Length: 493
Figure 1: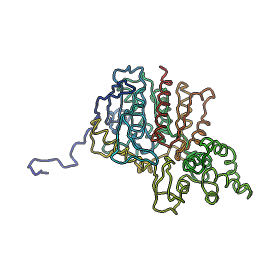
Figure 2 (figure 1 turned 45 degrees about the horizontal axis):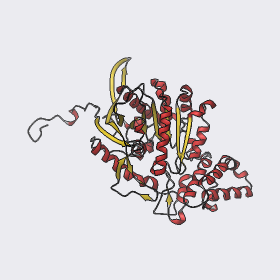
Figure 3 (figure 1 turned 90 degrees about the vertical axis):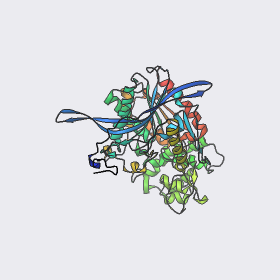
Figure 4 (figure 1 turned 30 degrees about the vertical axis):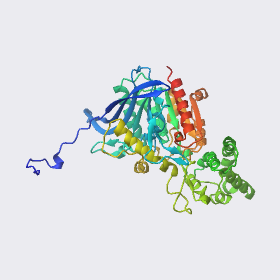
């Protein structure tokens, strides 16, 4: 082949493949917190994951498999043997770490607005005086096919789009960063949100059993350890009572309970969800007409839905149906990730809304802020699109390890806790989180198979907000304080 300048070129198929290499960029920054200057270094970019290749019993080297994007914050001058480090990620599956990064933990945060008052573009990025960096170094990890993370040329992304592949790849990132930065003696934490808590529960055991890496603590935000408590499927009545207090909280926020205090409403809903409601569902058509009518009336009163809707739903209100129904008479739908948010639809006779207004409200601010931050402030350039949240990854995620069973990592977490009795667990829940309900979280934690003496290792916190409770400013401030106190106490230093 001859190019226009007359020089010979190799055919495309003969061009040597690019050898993957880390492309990390380091910048220096400072932040003032209560008149004290915090100097820190940020290292961001992609690191190459490799696998050991053995052929016929012979070691054939390390083959590059994926390039994983991370952003690491380290405080200048700190003793690496005493300074905690927290590895953070979101969930989805298919989500980048942008939400925890720019919403709660990092030294810079986006101003996204809140329910009823969303921020307009072009948004604002400000210093986060409540950053966890004041107490722990931070490493934000984007799993393969999120952020800028991709498989290397010739490798399959699907190898990482599943429970075990995801655990192993994120675990390898943590091991590599820890070893390369001399942090094996540092107090170590994992912080996960939503499916990130599923990942964290599995990782705690994987890091112990595969690498001998024992953690000081887990930060679990919007818990999703046991999908049996979360997924509405035929024959599974468990989610209906566990979602009921959240329905009541959302109804309260939208004025369906008058001037009753929220805690009073939740206490009533919790009592019914814990005792009478499961018994009502278990009895099926053995309920008398009077018993069924009483259940319909109670559920309608607690949730703000009409008795007709509760009756037609056969006492079982699937969550998206409920969020579509609650404010139907006002031509509004409410959010799943945060039931405080409302939005519009094109058809108010449908069973399920077309979009979650709570995710639509924050997608723009977080996407713009992240892209600006990486390029303009952290000086990292990449022409790939930064995948904030991939629904393609989510829809194709493999749970083959749980064939003929529902997805749960409760026993993995319990095993990790039993083997490492020093590991603390902090769980944060939003009352208006319509994806991972707080009462379901309480249920799952109560069923962890750990000794009673170890239950004091678990702390819980509740916020009057949703799945990303930190979009609500009072909740963000309180949660930041709660996490700082947890890390300081669990670091054992």
